[in-house]
Length: 205
Image (cartoon, rainbow, N blue to C red; front, side):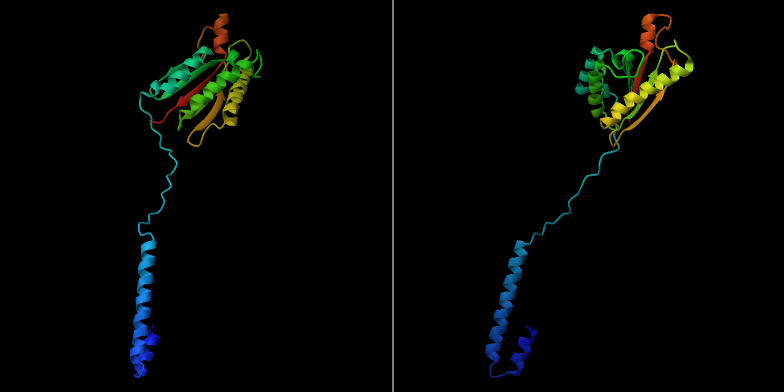
């Protein structure tokens, strides 16, 4: 365009013709710029990708969430005792609902019991999960300690193989042997109740 203007200045005879061409080119460029500007979006905004939520906080009425209440009622049918504190849930599972007698091999009851536990954990993001195994006092202390550890390890393995802990959760397990009995070991029912696995679920608040 500049070259066309310079040429027009040095060619006086054809000055009007060159000027006319210059104006036509200038007008064409102006129209093109306006058209392109109309088509080009001006309301650009960068796409914001939300960060995964890791700062979960629970209110003190979390045990009354309908889904949680429903699952706790179903677990009770499978002899699982649930104890809810302000920001903690304790599940007490008798070993006869998980293992075959005298071993840590899973029985048929364990399938439904653990299925309900897994469903419950899906409603508790951000939780710290601790699996504790306990025994009665019939065998030697060393045997009871090892048996309770293997039982807790087995249950923690089920959680792990099903995706727990999730991204925002943690999982640990331990065996406590015959310590912390919940019933009298001198009674048959007491022995059975003391052989158990407890799942402690701590919630952030």
